[in-house]
Amino acid sequence: MLDGREHDLTLLARERGRLWEHAHPADDGRIACPQGPAFNVRFWNLVLLLLVLGVGVPCIPVPLSTIALRTITREDLTAATSRYTLAQRVEGNIGCALAATLVARLAALHRVPFIQHISPLNPAYLGYLALLTAGLVHAGGDPVAARPRALALVTTEVNRQAARLA
Image 1 (cartoon, one colour):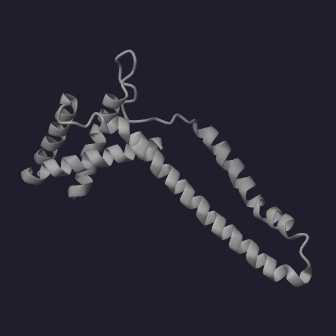
Image 2: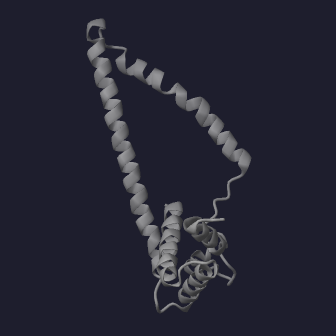
Image 3: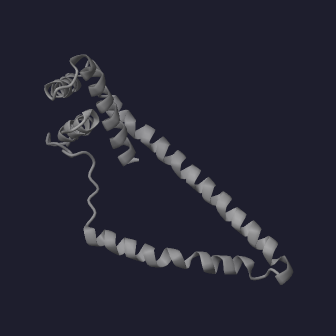
């Protein structure tokens, strides 16, 4: 037996991609991507990339610190190592903050094509919302709370697809 949230996500999984279809129709009238945006990567291409990264990334820190600290005298090595470590950590945090900001900005930009089609004037969206609400009620949900839950599911799906594109 599924609880309310699991049931909502299961129902949403069956309906996934409808917003994508309306926002990004194919030129010849067929559905551009029925399950949302697809990233077609072959398994072995991904394995090869991860293998190269797995072998190469651990080889970076030791030579980098050796090059950075090679001209430091033995008396100053402790202070230099501390400053080097501090600089690495601060720069790493700045890099993470910049990456998070960039992803959030791109996700906001990718939400625009989806949000343009979420309107009470769009019959396709109204049909999707009615279908989602009816599915929640049919599954035993509260009829009064079904519409807000359906709206929350639509918002979740829009945010998920925008983040995936970002």
